[in-house]
Image 1 (spheres, rainbow, N blue to C red):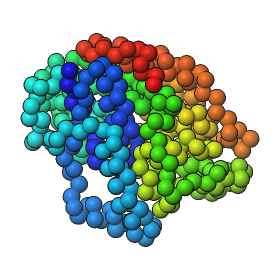
Image 2: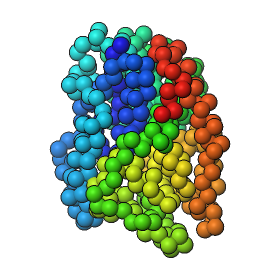
Image 3: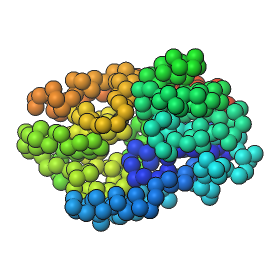
Length: 357
């Protein structure tokens, strides 16, 4: 059996690369040969140069280049790519050789993303070969001008799934279609499984450190400094310190697992903190874009974890190092079974015990 994955493949984002790996490895449990299609990068050379230039005042430009190399190294070691680069106008050529095509995971169905093109909805494929594996809309609604287009996209799946409960409710309310809610694929495997993909950073890490990973604004700097002082820890700032900005996905996993505490506004940063049993401080993201907080609501419901109680806005110093995830791990077993049953109905047979790692 042969399966092709359509997901984001450019942009050096930890969650993006690690979910791609998780989708690949989950599907391989069926015994299939699994390939990921590289997506054509829609960003212009001018945009890339402007982005790189914006990092110069922060002292991160050289680290940005090193970071990209780290991501490419991760890809070459862990992701099996098709030789094809696909786009709206350039779909996969040898469609008949594939038994299934999988869309997801990540925010590949966001109506606000320029990269959420028709290939993310597998329109190039016969509908009987299409599988939606936890894709995210990453938006509370679909713009009026895109609703008819997205109706056709969603209606093209016999088996429809999404990552957030709000997305399932939105699809049902707008189109009367039922979408199952599945966990993010990175949750299909335990922390011990993810350890095999770790790599110790060449730059080294402090003995005791608070790991910070903020994709939004730097609104919590004063509180983070207070937390570090309270715990007598150094700070490892993944996106603000050139030493750590260059780290790839494997080094990210190592940094999370060896942290004394993780403070983040990142969805996948939170997931890996939980999988590795690390104390987590949730930092509500300040953003001018679409509200994507519903993914944390669904994650909290799936795992029984309260992000409100662990918010940087409310947690007190005496509670910083609390991290009992035993109930969350119990719930994960049931959530993984739901994924296995969904994929079985799609035509993929995966041993239920294999998805724990």
